[in-house]
Image (tube, rainbow, N blue to C red; front, side, top):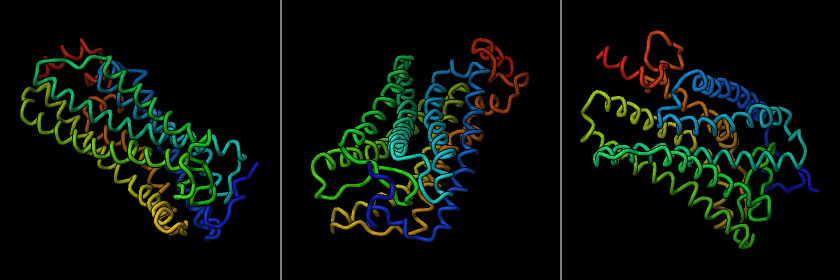
Length: 326
């Protein structure tokens, strides 16, 4: 079986670069990984000790943070120490498993982000028609997130696509194929970019714009003002997360486009190879931070103001409490 470094220079371009960059990369992955684990674990603990999960929109919040926490648990104990050691530390089979899980949670994050935006649009549209979005729609969206993540993470394990050395030479990731790689490689990579990259990004901005426009027209009451604040919070969350994913997208394009157009795999700039995984790891902390600043109910629950705020009360008691203070 081939080991991680049984590839040529074109497949592991960063293996020949200054190794001090890898030490910095590993340290940053560990710092952001620990920070993300603490934030997302804090959110999970809050959901366990409160009734927030009864509010339907918060089910999708928990779904997104599941993907973020999974991504943190990969970067913190595996990718970080391997970057510091300047090589993969856990064997070839585990490297393939790492690449699968990293791909799985990456797709999961993108689809979960799209699901939250779609829910905002459906709530505004159904409110205009005096209809409700039932819980089964939420479970359907969550099921789609899991299904899409499996569909676009498993094929490289079976020869459709390939997990190989990444640009840093320390972990495994999806290897972008050339035009000569065959239909099995291109048949996976092209749909992956379209379905898990281009379509969700376009959909996020499209449905977010539609949701904001509908809310501006139809949301007038005090209760709907909370929904407008949550939508604004999700808008900030989407823009910030996608901005932090831009370096990873640029890195993928830097590796793949010359390979498709000219048939060679170029060296990756050290700054880009360093910044892309760090920014992707930092993106896992964005949801909790955005909800802390933008969602009043979640913020109150996260800060533990159980006696001073209705956020941790049972929904029926919360409604009565809100009527009394307004």
